[in-house]
Length: 163
Image 1 (cartoon, helix red, strand yellow):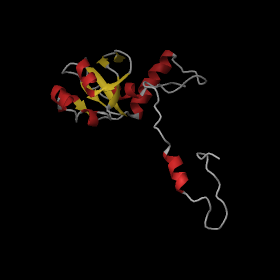
Image 2 (cartoon, rainbow, N blue to C red; image 1 turned 30 degrees about the horizontal axis):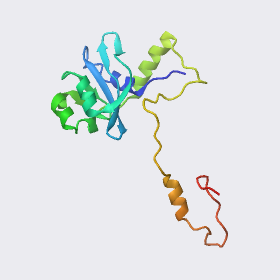
Image 3 (cartoon, rainbow, N blue to C red; image 1 turned 60 degrees about the vertical axis):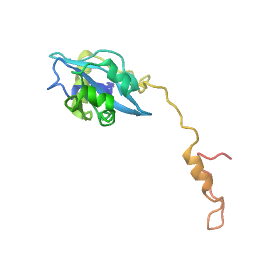
Image 4 (cartoon, rainbow, N blue to C red; image 1 turned 120 degrees about the vertical axis):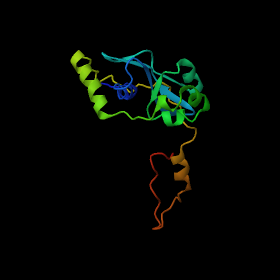
C-alpha cells in the first residue's frame, strides 16, 4: 500500500514548465478556505517545501512571491479574489486536476525507496478537523414522511430516525 497525497500529484503535473519555480497546488476546502502546500520543481523531481495547510486566499497570497505558479481545481475559486488576481495574474493561475499518471509516478518513486504504508494504520490526511453541520438534512426529510404508508401499514423507521 502506497499513499500519495493529492496535492503532491497536482504539483507534479506542472513539472515540464515549472523548473526551479515554486508551485502551490490548491483544492477548495469550503468556507472560503483552500488546502495547499508549496513545492519546488528541479531536475530531481518535486520537493515539498513546507507542511500541508489550509487558509483563506489573502493569507496564502501573502506567503508567496509574484513568480509562484498556482495549480489545481481550487484555482478557479482562488483567482476570483481580487488580491490573488492582481498579485499573480492569469499566467500564474492554472486550473489542473491530479492525473492518474502523476499519482503512478509518485507511487513508483515511493516503491523504489521502499516507502510503504501500514494497511492497519493508514488514514486520510485531514489538514483541518471535521466540522459537522448542525442538523441532519436526512432527519428533516424523514420527519416529513407520513408514519403510515398508503397500504395502511406502518412504515419502517430509517437508520437516521430515532425511536
